[in-house]
Image (cartoon, rainbow, N blue to C red):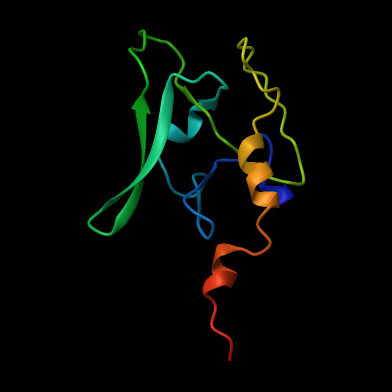
Length: 118
């Protein structure tokens, strides 16, 4: 993820290693769901008739007017984004630290693995 895509006013959702949806250009009110290290929702990408959709599921019953949150699991080996969710188990960063450790073990991107040499 490029630095210009990080920070306030950024509404990016990674579908896979190759695709990112920019909700500032297309999307729904769901782009306003905030991050939490102890979220009440989770996200999944599903395919419906060949089109991918981001679906937000509740992890538990949610009280009226309670803020909806999910774990953004932001991955960047270059920059840490601070988290201010305030929950007891807060990681202190929005980053998915576990995934970042795993990605440092990978030496090539997925697309490079499947490129044919001329």
